[in-house]
Length: 374
Image 1 (cartoon, rainbow, N blue to C red):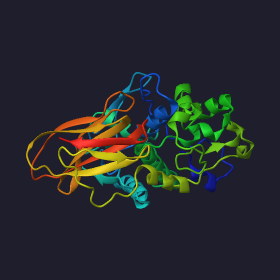
Image 2 (image 1 turned 180 degrees about the horizontal axis):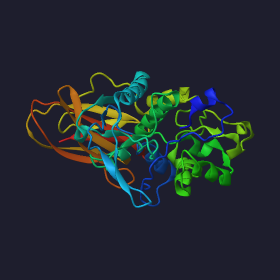
Image 3 (image 1 turned 90 degrees about the horizontal axis):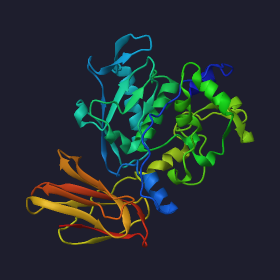
Image 4 (image 1 turned 60 degrees about the horizontal axis):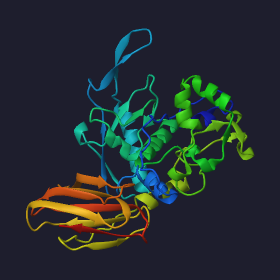
């Protein structure tokens, strides 16, 4: 993200602000021959959590939490990932801001990193700010950061950065990489701009985070939101077209109206009590692409159960167990892009309560699919 406070305090200042830099991740591998609609449905939903997930976040908080960094001159030193309480509270406030717009996800702070899907470090010296996107955080080991804050998050710029990085955690990409933005870059100037301080990016990092366009299959809708919290600010000299942005792009650094609509699509408020899924009773699902259905399971006996979907569809199915009033992950399966149906096998215990969530990526036969427990 760009430093909106810089523009307010000194609009003539030329020094580039510090920007978020997403770590590169392997591109998803889909079977060849998928039609565009099916591919698009999978790619836009693959990073999203099933609605109702409780995301646990952890702040690295011990003197040994960090890494040993080797520098180009051959020296090395230990670099801590621990931030002070003011920094942590600013990030907590950003989580609350996202929750307060009405979101089906929950964010809960934990003090054990093994319990956390989101693990946050504060390394101010040279790494910058970044986050992995959505469910990609699950690919990392429990001792790894899923996000880092590389500057003070108690400033205007820092508070915007915290909202931005949490947006990535929710599954949102950089908005200026939207192919519908229509931005034509002066690429030579872009590379020069980001190579300088304070970012000092190499060409591959600049390409990955600025110049690389997402494919139209990876984005939702057909428009661009220049006011999004996921949009960088850019000076006008980097932009050749469109003409209306010759003076630069200056997002306000807060959640835009379209940002606030994002949870309504993927994470709407949940129904209080999902219907019960009974053994050996198939339940048909008439879901639009991206929609979700939830069911409660209360086993009458302790044994291994199968939970599976049926139909010509791509789905992700996730099973949770209620523990001390909170749903904890048990198992999940994702059949997207493959000629099979999602299937779970788990031992369920009599007297306990479970919730299974089914999100539909795409159906190529009138959106009809089904789920059954047996």
